[in-house]
Amino acid sequence: MPEKAKRLAPKGETLRELFLKSGNLCAFPGCGQLMMDAEGTFIGQVCHIEAAEEDGERFNSTMTNEDRRAASNLMLMCYPHHQKTNDVTAYPVERLKQMKDDHERRFSRPDRAILETLTDWTELDAPTEVRNLKRLDEVLGWNNGATELQEAAEELNAYVARLKNVPIELRRFLGAVMKRAAKMDSSRAVQTGMAGTLILISDLKGAFNLGERAIAERANQLDAYGLGDIDQIDTDMGPKPAVRILDLKSGWPLWRDIITFCEDANEPLEAFTDDLDFARLDG
Image (cartoon, rainbow, N blue to C red):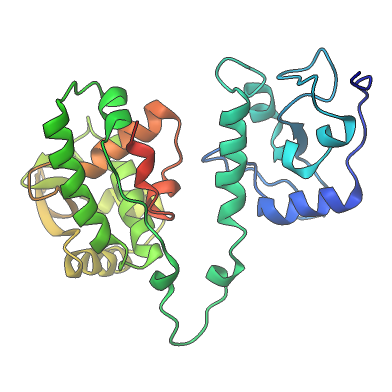
């Protein structure tokens, strides 16, 4: 007979583990809310994936009370996102576990955060290949046939094999530029076509708080890897420099589609820029 559900406070060692793996950030994708402020006050919330009590969200009667307060069943979030994830239909157990895993994996590799001379960090990356792109097809509403999806998968795998050799900081820049371009898509700061998506450097300066030279240097790096370059957008003030993210050779606007996929499927962009986990696009 299962034991009576009773809320137990997490152990100190469990809280230490959660905090270290949290990176002092809310686990909800894209949230930058700190869990501990500059004065050392904990301002986050310890959240259960499967509830501690019977009337709670996602309660699992087969778990023990110790299981319920274990680190594997807990995650740190800010108050608004704790409340948001109380929607059990939108946030079932498996989705929260994936969210926890994605977030904690970002901070479980201290080797990436410690710069060591002459270390090629791209050797540590292990991209996953795609097989069928069925999930991408479903989320974006393509309704493509198996042959078309297979051809796209082969092109994407060849691209990812090259992307693996690109430093993670530059991959993050690529993703951030494309995310900004998607946000500003209806403005005159963005232009699509011309083999890719263009966004004014002046817009990126303000959005990223980076100087024009720093942005240009990163764009030149993208050019060196065949991922992007610098071009121009015609404005009322004449031609102005812009960063371009290149489409694939077939004309597939891959990163525009990935941004849309992440938004519609509630996937973190870091899964693609950091972890190269493109298998998430499969069904």
